[in-house]
Image (cartoon, rainbow, N blue to C red; front, side, top):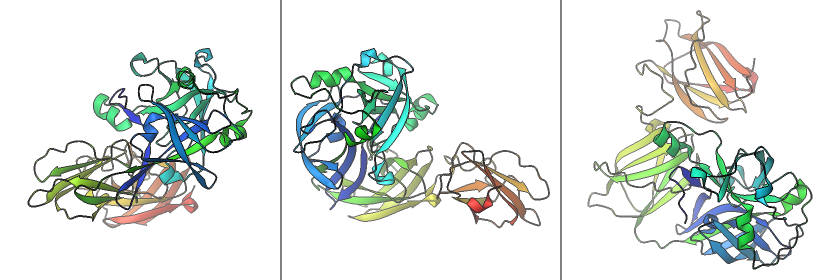
Length: 417
């Protein structure tokens, strides 16, 4: 597989393990002929023993006709006459600022298998370090978008969704979180790889046609069970991007076990072939999308064991949810408003001074909870006003709340101001 840069994350979702042996991953592809030819990314089918293309509720077996790891492109064939297929345009005719659209099946383990559309512009005509294989676009793409079509305003393919900057790796390396930096493979490389096949001139005229010409790809990889395995269960309330295991007290975490996948909240991930030591004791660490880590130490491992991580396993020295003054009492806030919350303010009821956002750089998605520290010690009355502000700028307020240590407060749409 072509490695561009450690800051790049390949786009494939790894949502589940079947019978403890078969890894299922999903991605996107698109039809380039009426007789079942499909273009996708090579990394979407990397290591796959079986490849399926799902159309409506039917899965079709896919044959790999051509795969090029240097350009990260693959050509598949299924026994299906698809009525709609794309024309491949020349990316060279594209200009900076041109409108683009991306179709795909991102985060299917969270969002389901419905197709998703994002839009943006061409931000640059090259990739990382001026790599001419790629171009940069502002249309948001997520794990599972890999292999999806990038379209111009004429509904022609000018590229293939492939990469984005890995937020956590960039934060660790550069000290910043990148803002929506995504990359596609230029269409000229599709044409090169398709030169041996008859594709036609395409017949997609509108977005409905484009949806019909986009395919949901499922890859199955069978793994040999060669050692003890455990099941990591994520109940932290956040998406986990990294999973590390270390023999107890060795402090050698090694490589990330998740690879290019993610572990959603309420999801599970199997780690197999563990070289157990005599005591079978390990330290286990998870890192979420905000860079917060969750650690269990001296865990005695047994085969097929479920190890559940919750918010209580968070490492206090890495938690961005805890503000300065960890000796102050904490308050747990649950968001049921239906919107993403960006700011949380707490004020003593008699002061009417909101002060600073106590959630820091965190965001609080709908359905999630977060622990925040009260800005001052509990008063004799222990009553506070609490205000949340969502992504649209709307506020939600509870007044004269009687706060006790470790209390959970739930906000709903009825608390909107």
